[in-house]
Every structure is written in C-alpha cells, then in structure tokens.
Image (cartoon, rainbow, N blue to C red; front, side, top):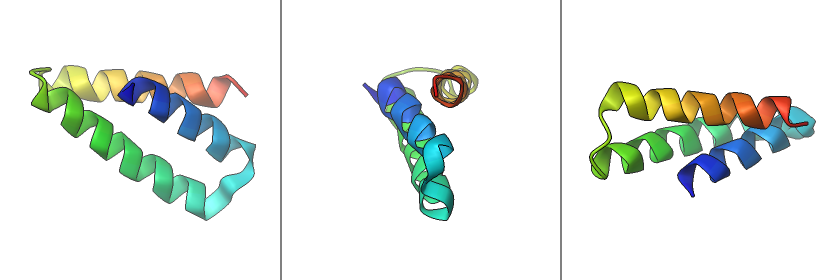
Length: 61
C-alpha cells in the first residue's frame, strides 16, 4: 500500500502538481519509509523500495 501511494503521488507530480506535488511526494516518501522500517524492513531496503516506487510512478505517466 505504501509503495502504491508513492507511485501514484509521483505520477500526479509529474502530471503537473508542481510545488505542492513535490512537497506531497517528499512527505509520502518519508512516511512510507518509516512504515516499512516499522514493519522490520532494514532502512537501506526501505529506502530502495520507496525510491523504486517513486521512479515507477514517474515513468508511468
């Protein structure tokens, strides 16, 4: 669910949300990474997953 939220936010940002979209994506990336780490995912892996989801959302548009 966190990964999907990042993908969708990144896709919306690349669709033209500008500054608001940048802030939203940054906040969601932080929250998603925190959630993944809270479930036992090591920090480097959590960051990799979040980064990959953001990249996937950007290329999806």
